[in-house]
Image 1 (cartoon, helix red, strand yellow):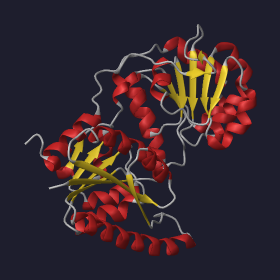
Image 2 (cartoon, rainbow, N blue to C red):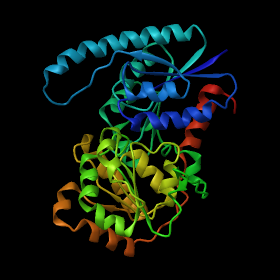
Image 3 (cartoon, helix red, strand yellow):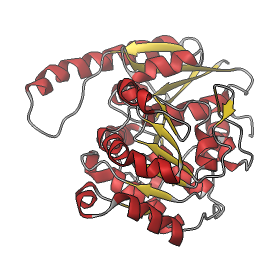
Length: 361
């Protein structure tokens, strides 16, 4: 019988990228068909279709914890999304055996509920140390819950929750650093320390403003690679020189930049934190304070406790000399190799194999 895995998750790259990492490995398996379910216009649509996946867009709404008139509209969108998901899964079941795999975001909620109602297996993965509302809801309907950090076990039923770790790309564990070519020049090859700054896929106004304010001082010390976000690139492109390179998004070369960097300054999304835990590079995290349940702070705390990362909260930035803080941190914090951090990718693939594909049975 044909095996079909319906991945779902979206709203941000942080929910989609771990799914794509798992999908990349599953594509190597024989007789497995991978499809993606997301919102009609979300970032997940662009990323999934770029991987050549069959994509289904469904209606979705946001679940807010505060009063908003949009909540009333979104009730209908969520209900419609549930009907969309039920119809989709019912059709898919006629083709073969189905597994729903969710990586979070509000679009995943109707898909996970529909999967359970229609009698298919539902697995979910929670990336952050503080579980998001969408995955907490999905957790009630899931047969298996995988978590990246032990911290988030408190949000799910213990009997079906396992700490898998975060599904990391395999090149995180490869010590080789591939070049990053810009106009015929490998910008990772330099006698200066390399500073990588990123506010995530969409960029960060705060981090970008910090770089702009201190660009002259930083350029005198470092070779700077700055992921600014698509909307900020027109502002930062004119500032580029031999020591400063601005990107909207570092795609295939991201892991190589992280491995080469002498210092990484970043927000504290679960993916970036997990990659730096594996790679072990010196890192300073400035968590997004308005993230759900202050999840980015607790993600960063994992890195502080395990590899000695520094956490700078936004409220502290006005009280410290930013460049002096970087210099002091670099003098006291040497690069630390990963302490055999497990790759959640292998754990999750094994569970899918044993409990759905049955190749290892």
